[in-house]
Image (cartoon, rainbow, N blue to C red):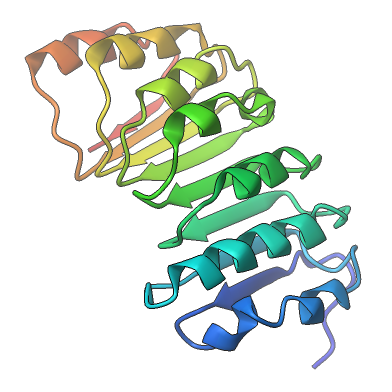
Length: 193
């Protein structure tokens, strides 16, 4: 199959379909660093958590050399502190999805890459620290919070994100205090719950 050069490509590494990939990360090192613009690493198998953790940090280290990588999704995986640090090395990264309750959100929030993100999706975590970091971003235009816990004050802090246009609150419980905070986000063009 021939794919035109201008078509962005996504690589999906599934530990569920091929658990060996976390042992054989050297295969990924053979990929042309200009090939992919998107990467998703996922697994629902937590039998060998340490192998997955090391595999993810190795994969992120390898793809830090990929010059066109703009989007990364980490789904259902343990994310080590080294993996979090490796995310900062992805200099072209502009969109990120993190779906993992097994992540140190304070360490994750301390990373400087948040302010260059245009799109962020967070799932199944306590997100106050990350939302606070995102509130300093002038690039953020889409924020998706799925089954995520956060405070009304964190939500209110997003009013400083002048380019935030879309806020998605999927399966996220909000009360009247959240509605008051949402009313302060005048820049929003789309709010979905």
